[in-house]
Image: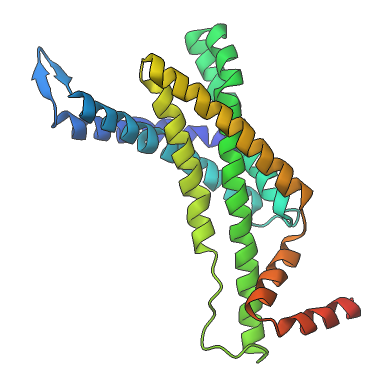
Length: 248
């Protein structure tokens, strides 16, 4: 439901941002009879920017916000695979509403084609987002533990050094980049780009289903992984965690 609702701010913001991108690139073109013509290299850059920023960044950004608000206070979001589950369902909620819109606008044939291309595409972008989003949460948990151990005197360092910022950035950058490439390949009317589009879709199918299989196979609680991160950084904590396990 939150994924579907995330389409509302996408609709509101996409036109102004794409109009700005179009007006920016129009300054590099030549105007003839009221139309602006871009050279082929500039047009390719324009397509990549408009698809990456004007589409992918907006859609994945608001999906990320929906993911955040659906998990930030959830006691059920506590294992590695949960990030994939929540992110995929947010993405599918968005994709479902988007596909209904395209079906009403362009017909059932378009809706059926997108059911095998765009909807799975959104799911794969969600897998990418959820993988790194989970690790961001894990490192945040490890950071909290690190601060507690520092305050208790069990770790003697001047300041905490564990951070999940790289995973936070990756949870946005990777799905945006994949989404942008996907849209870029399917937006240019040429045989080469059509072949590249379907090849990229096949790559997404293979790599992301492998990722799902791997994460589900080695799924474990975020706390367990966070403790492992701390032990790798501070081996002396292994004895402390062993005592905690014995007491529990």
